[in-house]
Image 1 (cartoon, rainbow, N blue to C red):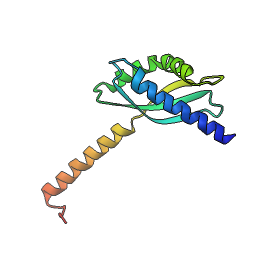
Image 2: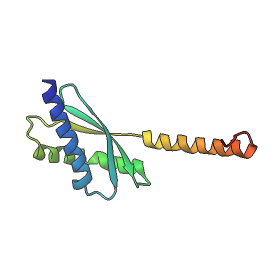
Image 3: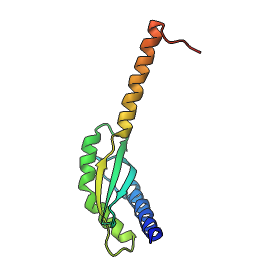
Image 4: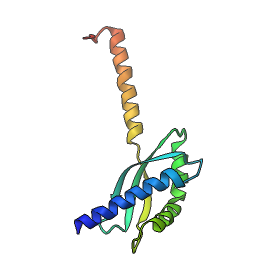
Length: 122
């Protein structure tokens, strides 16, 4: 039973990725990168954690993406043969932005230490 559930989940993941990459033609959204899929226990809902590449206004792009949840679900229903297609819920994933801010802060700190002569280059 678990094997069937995992197979269904992987089919849903692949198709949602394809829909977001090839079928969603909204220029306001830009390039969407799904990073994680979290399924409800009964597969009735899937949370898709997304981030955006090359988009300056990510929060506006995310709002536009949320408006397309119905389109993604109906497109998924046409592609998979399931009795009940799960509800798609997009969740904004800020982990890439946080990592970039952290990397930038570490770089600034390293430059300050080097300018003060406290950091030895080995």
